[in-house]
Length: 432
Ligand code: UGA
Image (cartoon, rainbow, N blue to C red):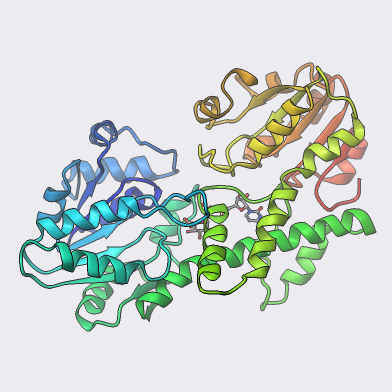
């Protein structure tokens, strides 16, 4: 099939590349000329395992094209996916200005039947609005349908999530686009769920809000374990063995971050408010998460009350492993707290150093490797569980540290082993 995907962020670029990989003719559109030029030359704008390979292969075999011209994209395709960013506005709502610009160009350019698919995360009712907006600004009299088809990929495993989804949601009550999109998604070999457009839009927010709720829930259980005694890892296993609960997304830690959970939880609370409903659970999920991000430095302060001029090592800066994304990363809160307390920070991340430099500027010292970041510091704070931080040479770590303080925000180490190595080890929701 002939498709265009507008927006080459995580969702757009990965979806476009995966559709091309399945043999479709895909035009990826982005207004950023430098990004488009880079993609044509095999330069990926994001770090995502497996992405470069499929982009290069499909660009070379002609299945995938990149352009800055949305007009060209509309002309070359029967289905147009809107996958532009919908960042949070100050009031927590989603900023739909990019969606509006795209809808306007589609309206002005299309000359024959098109299916416009909304893949960006947008508040309920956006599909109705896009439909009305296109109808209002249409230059040529032709038919079109607007469908909501949300995306559930995770950063760091985006290609494999897109190729092997748990489900595909197609939100439309019209038969023609439903049949065409069914056919397009056949090769993904995943169950297809047909819903009305509003439900599809809500599914996306509800899924993220539910997952975020699981995380804040287990983080609160961890806090109880720390106070009352108990081990959250055991508790998570114990409750997760119940299929109704499942053991997924029950890893206690330093709070959730990234481009999605923080934004989408706030946005669904706002949607609820706009509809005269107080979404108390998710409101608390957000609040608990803000507190959770502060727990690591609070633990450090209990051990080292005066952090002035003390150098602290921070391992991991991206919001999770296998991505260079720093958006809402817990490391931001951790480093901010350390700096506010007068500490100096030596930091290392395997991939996100350039992005981190944009966030922290010259306020911290950037190290070339893990052990360099640990050398001559008063404590290690493990914030992001990259593989290489889970397999440290503990004897070397202890030798390099001025004090054997190790605060593990992701429960990466065995309690007994850390005790034997002589660390003052604090993790999340486990005995210390
Ligand atoms: C999330 C969802 O998982 C995707 O299904 C969704 O498509 C995506 O948002 C989106 O809306 O685009 P993502 O933000 O990439 O994906 O990453 P996750 O793997 O879900 O992790 C989110 C955060 O939760 C991370 O900070 C992670 O460290 C944290 N987390 C996750 C925990 O603290 N504990 C867990 O058990 C799981």
